[in-house]
Image (cartoon, rainbow, N blue to C red; front, side):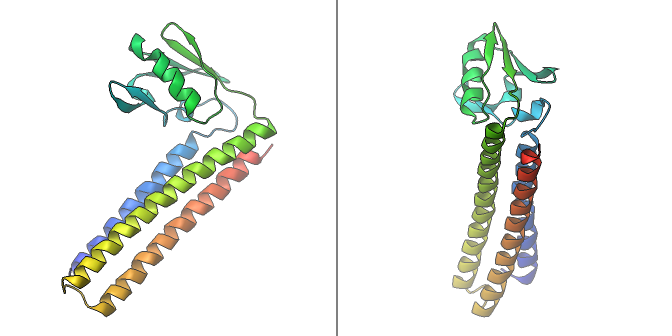
Length: 189
């Protein structure tokens, strides 16, 4: 592992950690505090055809009313799976089925519901932190291997180790700040 390799590795680490933060932002976009938005159920996965598929690949998501979402399921056999996926998503939604149309009323945001949404936001943030830590672990393993193989010195290993840790700390702080902002947005009355 040479100096240019280390530079590329740092770029790769940053890119992959950025990806985790982007996923967090898209999941947070689904946690709406007022109107119904299709992004609320887009991250929900449905067990279909033997694998987990995003909601948008099994039906058309619509917003017919400000406090209502709908999913027009394309395959009649997946209607129950869509209903179950929405109920099990931890979003506090109770869908109702009408043929191949699944209607999802969006409940008013009571204090209890706001607290529930902050817990969901916290869960999303923790998943992002785990993703960032996994990237760090992978990078640390590569550094250990490079040192063991004699590609880098022990001093270089410690220096790069600290660089990777600094990048990780920066992204964990970004995630925590994003979570704090989202929690404030949810709890505002």
